[in-house]
Image (cartoon, rainbow, N blue to C red; front, top):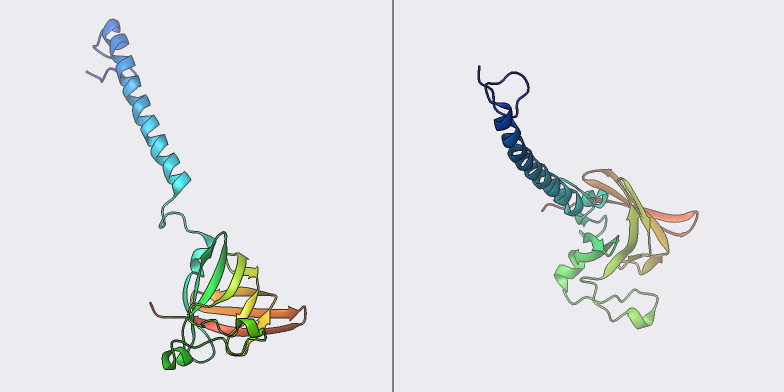
Length: 176
């Protein structure tokens, strides 16, 4: 019966052959182990989009608002999430629309297209808290709020100006 030099048990390999063969195989195994550990470490450190998803990933993307066929894109801004206006009935009629309903007259000249309306949201995986929020349709702002993911296609957006003075809208995921 013939066994490989590194296998346990009886062998027809002499003791000196086994002694000389073992370090070579051990070194080869150590190299393989180090390579495997290095690859695993790199995957853990850098991750891959598919393997390691952030809790924020479920919220990222385009959402339809309740009013005027608006579309808001939720995106990362630093370590938080933010949202900006991408589309809506008024913007299709006038892509150069300005923020004319803003209570701050100095801000009324800014464009609504691309306007940041959600800022500083952190948390997850189903609820994020942050603020401020802004509604360019009404000119209303909220100092704080929450984003609650009810399911992959439904988002509750709540803005508050005081503890009990809040307004909530339901947004739906926009087709890609």
